[in-house]
Every structure is written in C-alpha cells, then in structure tokens.
Length: 100
Image 1 (cartoon, rainbow, N blue to C red):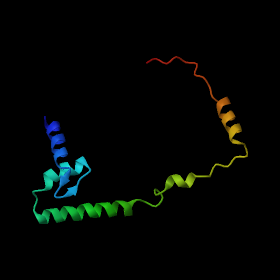
Image 2: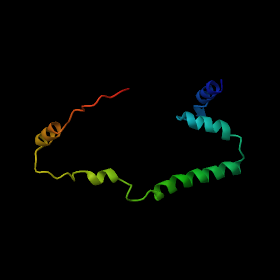
Image 3: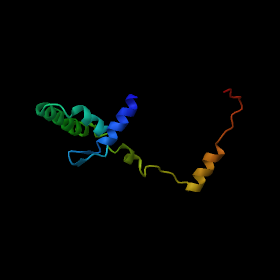
C-alpha cells in the first residue's frame, strides 16, 4: 500500500509551483521537503550544490576519460582478418562435464 501511495503521490506532483518536474524522485523528495523552513531549504540547496561541484573536482584526473587512453593503441602487423582467424583458431573446447 505504501508503494502504491508513493507512486500516486509522484504522479500528482509533476507540476509543482508552476515548474515541470520530470523526475519521480524529485516529486517524492518535494513531498517530504516542502514544509521545511526557508533556512533549512537554503542549507539543503547549499549542500546539494557543493556535492555537485565537489564530485567533479574530486574525480582524479587519471579516472577522467580513462577509456580514451586506449583508443588506437593496439599495434599489430597483422590485418584484422588475420587477427580474427588467430583468435578463432586458438579457441578450445572444454572436455569436462559441467553440472548445473
């Protein structure tokens, strides 16, 4: 019953104070936070804002764009077809029984 009530509450708050809310999570949080004092709301805004900037700043540079470091790094004199052929010929078949 609680889940159903939360889903119904979420669908009710898709437009809050003239603002379109696209996230059901935002609507659920709003239902909990709307009655806070202005001071408490400002503190939450400050915390949320700082969490967004800190998360970006705290990501080590070696983790940013790590996948792009590997682009184009494969060096091989073989053609793509030869590499595929070598991979396929190196495949083995298991000779043991697997019990499920």
